[in-house]
Amino acid sequence: GENVEQHPSTLSVQEGDSAVIKCTYSDSASNYFPWYKQELGKRPQLIIDIRSNVGEKKDQRIAVTLNKTAKHFSLHITETQPEDSAVYFCAASKGSNSGYALNFGKGTSLLVTP
Amino acid sequence: NAGVTQTPKFQVLKTGQSMTLQCAQDMNHNSMYWYRQDPGMGLRLIYYSASEGTTDKGEVPNGYNVSRLNKREFSLRLESAAPSQTSVYFCASKRGETGYEQYFGPGTRLTVT
Image 1 (cartoon, helix red, strand yellow):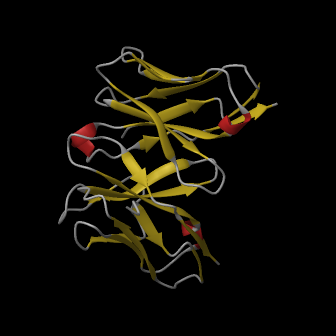
Image 2 (image 1 turned 180 degrees about the vertical axis):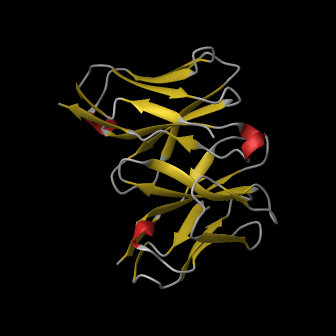
């Protein structure tokens, strides 16, 4: 099955700095790559996603890049703020081939210090 | 719209007891999913239902059964709970085949002693 690896497991940055989280996937049939943010005790919330026919997508301070050849994708957060502190999960999906189910990475705990 | 709702929020079971986790969505979504979340493990798929009347196993289905009662509801049953099933359980739903985004419920925190 699909294997999604995520690095780093923890990341500490100062407010205003950028943060980058990287994921790799194993199955070339994967075609959808979302990123979820989870605050302590809360449900995962989608923050950005990208499909395999696009190389980059940006939404204000958040961007995701995808390299299909290398099978890796990354989340970039610029001008980090303390409220960005949370656990971030990447995921990959093979679409209709697997009922659109998501395979998640193990998460990155991001701490933004003032 | 309430989105995706789950009951109960918390539950403590003894080993061997059974229980059903309930999930409902009011977004008219076709697909529904059950994930479990353990510390340091991310979320892992237990079962999913791509459409009403169908269910399929995910990555970690052992010890669980599911029922897609109707389009709104998808329940997860533990027939004989084990300590290894202590986890936070999330239900999610997704609209039809043109959309990929999954919406998660608030979760059920289950402890098996």
